[in-house]
Amino acid sequence: MGMPARHYYTAADVLAMPEDGNKYEVVHGELLVSPVPRPRHQFVLFRLVQAIANFLDRFPVGHGATGGDLLVVGKEEAAATKWSQVKNPLLVVEILSPSSIRQDRFTKRRLYQEVGIPLFWLVDADASTVEVWTPDRRFPVTETESITWHPEGAGERLVIRLGDLFRLPSQR
View 1 (cartoon, rainbow, N blue to C red):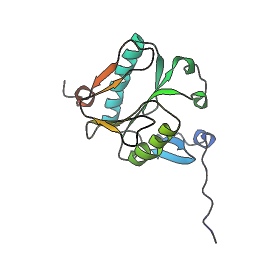
View 2: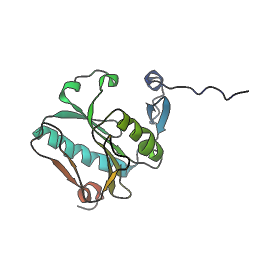
View 3: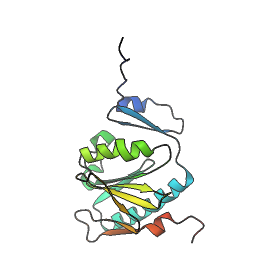
View 4: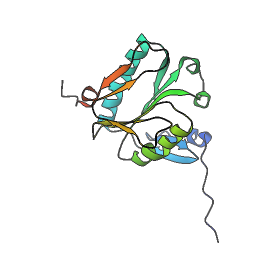
């Protein structure tokens, strides 16, 4: 008697999931379910969105989107009507949460490297660090001072100081 067959999840399965406040994703046929992010996660995400949106206003090389985390796609893919049409993101940012550490650090990171995402930031707000991954890296570069992004066509680099990114809302 063998093991029961494991269900291979698809995008259609995700679309059929309940609207219960959880975030549902599929990576390599595995269903990833995350609860609503913590407030600190949302504060850090908001600051990243602000910094990247301001940069893209000055250097319109792409467009950003959020869905719990952050994705930047090139101008040519910004008109996509379905996520399946987005094939070449310029930047992907995931912010670690206790419930998503394994899937963000291993499952999704591996997928991003396999499909050639040029830059993946894995943000750890609790440690005030950002792991910087590129497709060819076996290990990340762990940044503690700042992160930079210089997409093709931008006149200068975006530099985000991590002290500003991780400051608590009451630390103004």
